[in-house]
Length: 207
Image (tube, rainbow, N blue to C red; front, top):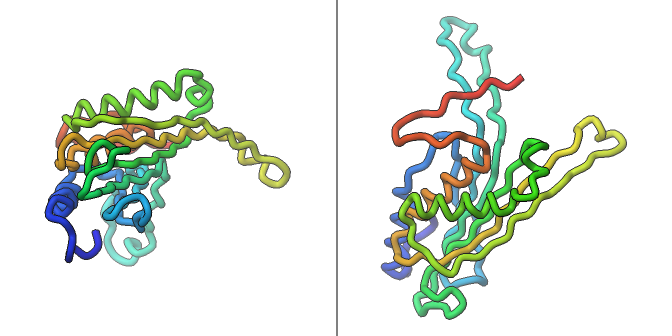
């Protein structure tokens, strides 16, 4: 998460908490360039959720080198941005602000549900509550996107995506719980079933 010199101690503690956040094996998380105009200090994480793939059976001899693991299917993508202003912000009503984005492709029957937006918002609120991520000043938008293909691309068929953009102010500097809650929500968008701690998700065979 970049250099740590000249960073406020409170922001350093928050970065340390993010590094310790637990996440599922299907989540790929990496630091990406953070916005520079929203706050004096910021860190941004990009993520994609991929479908778990079965481990190939062990082979011996030259045949082992001929077997390539299948490329995992992307189920959802997102961004998690932590903003920090040591002087506080009247707009945020606090020193920290979390800004997030999630996008996932849906099954057609679910994508046509008129209550999809409110369901997506409920996922966010429940994930934060379930992880004890105390927060306030929460806001966001949920958008359904219909993509129709024509001409040489008509074989692709129509797709429906859901986008959720949300931001909130953590009640404390313990932002680890917020990243864990958001990671859970990304997995929910990706259609992965919730798992008890320490239990791995079995890969789903797709035709």
